Length: 325
Image 1 (cartoon, rainbow, N blue to C red):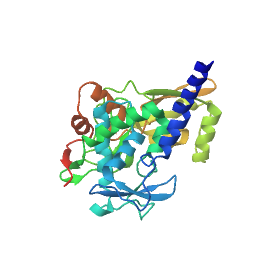
Image 2 (image 1 turned 60 degrees about the vertical axis):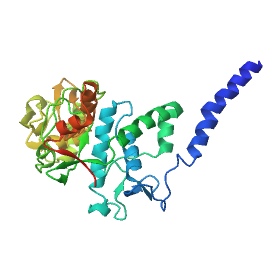
Image 3 (image 1 turned 180 degrees about the horizontal axis):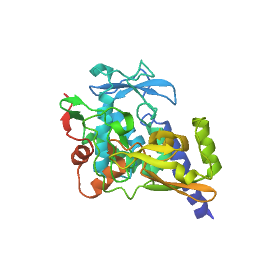
Image 4 (image 1 turned 30 degrees about the vertical axis):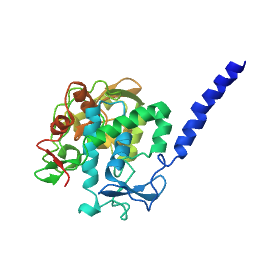
């Protein structure tokens, strides 16, 4: 009985007490607002969850970004590519280096809201997400990826790029103008071979036809669409170079593929459909806007022997990898 009791006590210490102590330790808690990092470049980060500004050294901030934006189980060269992209994005917004900062929070360089800037997790959040063993394994791996690319950024003809990325392209990335109108010379459509291990490579959703028509009428009150004529009323008008739907005809309306994706919460604009008596089944390929670096494609390239520079130069056309002064 004593052996069982000791064993239970040991498990309690390992599972409950030790993680709690680590979370409360000074190494885990985010830097206070007034404290600066030890590096030459300091980033003013607006934490949108805690609603405060945290000042930290650039490379430490990048570690939290990589941990939040890319699965830690990915190959190290993919993590390094993500680190360089994250650093490039950050440096481009640093007010101390001529950037405009965060438009939603003028007093900060950048914020942690991924819908506006880029995601970032503090160490206490990562410990809870990964667990004790996973934390030490993954934090060391990410820290190494960041340190091995310390100070590296992506440039195009001497200018810092906007290194947009997405989860899964579905086999080919998009030209920037097919998604956001503006043509960017380094955001060109390229083949992305190694993505089939992505859990979002394909997905099918089934929508009742009445709900499908109802949602479209809520968005376009004057649309002419009926259940009986639905099969003949949906036609692709224009495909993008990346193989996604750029424009589609829905009854008497021609709408953007990006709008259809938004209305129905689809994974991407690379979709096909099948209509039966009561529902429409929509199958998507890929996940995200499709422009720039595919994260699962980067991981696939790393698994097949590519290094981080080769990955970045594949997804961002004609760029250079430069060192910050």
